[in-house]
Image (cartoon, rainbow, N blue to C red; front, side, top):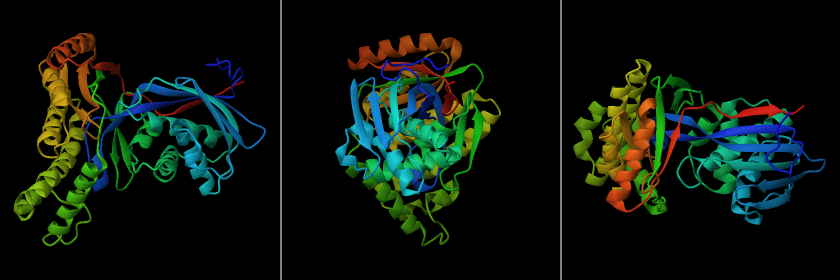
Length: 380
């Protein structure tokens, strides 16, 4: 028997939880065919639903105190409130593929902080995708489900995200990070150090990633490939450029292009090293790569801000911290810290107090653990 989360749906047929995610290493490499290292976290979108007799979707967003409904035929994003575009996009993407999508009555709530860079929107998409996958017998694997949800966000919502967020929410493994190859879509769970926690610190600065800045970074990476192809004819992206080759050829690149491309080449190399350290259970060596990754995002890719730098610098001096870095696109948002479980509470207190004293801002800090991906329970 499923315990209802709202009187709006007294007898739900399905109960679904889809986690948020944090990226531990491999930042700004997804659009360069690189390898990323996300983990699903134990903060969830919690969805309950029952099938409707007609082809209408009725939604209640409990946290917002808002409701909406829409017919499944002729779906258009502009006709919907922003929050409803994510589930509607999943329905639209499925129907684009010729899949059956049933009308539903659904309520959902979330413990994934909105706007903190922990992928609350991807968790909403994956939760609804898992619901319709079960309800309509699509038979999709978790990776296929993630790709459907990415299509929804790209083509219906209009956000040109990579696959990592939906992938982590769908495919997470408890106690593990996920080494995810954004080119081949192969992935492998990699164990996090036993007795460790993921502490996520929200700087309180909302990300203001201007499209022009993001687009310029992408353009610089593409320019680097264009120039380096004169010397390495077979390369398709910066993923194909090793650190040694880059060092020998970097002087051919304009300064800004060289800085940004160097971050990507070295970050991909860091992820490959990090996987080996994690497999060996060496949290200290992995943490050092986190610090190096942050320095690279600050100095080479130039996407950090003083508040994130301060959070990392404070964390590096607190007992029990293996490593820290900004996570996400940068220009605000969060840092992620790998911390010994037994030191986590003291770490949070120390980080919060010193951050406020140095910046005058308040950091929201969450102790999390790597969790399983989306889960679904049927009612009686």
